[in-house]
Image 1 (tube, rainbow over the protein chains, first blue to last red):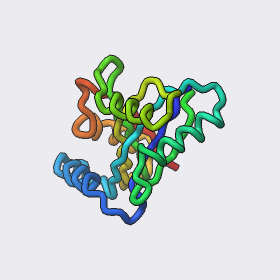
Image 2: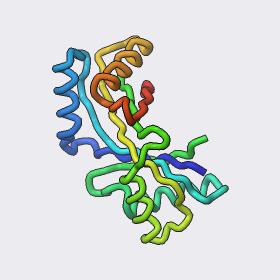
Image 3: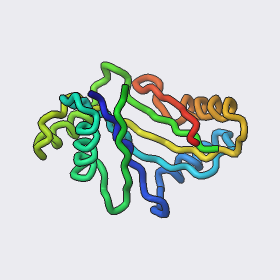
Length: 80
Length: 80
């Protein structure tokens, strides 16, 4: 079973990467771009058949390793 | 309107970051983890009301800047 974990910075945490992307997009002529937030996505292949267990294990992995819970939030979803 | 662009490495492209995450998860006791693929997610606030236009502009941004089309694929989706 494949699970996708998306890790984003918490609201209010400065996102220099997002700012840099936004600035570059403006320079390239994409003037309609406002706020830009950058994050990470990790797709995990899990040897698991139960969706609930797969999700809770992915969340445990996020808490232990994939996300820095001080400044980041994460969301896990099962992929089809 | 908010659009999310997810950028992942193409199939077959070596993913050292994914390999490192997988190895670390095994070390932490998450033995059920198999293949791990790491990617980026960029959330864009666009001054646009038409979903179709917002999506096509986000795809143009991905082609011009957000993704390296040689080794990466991208997918854009409108967020609620």
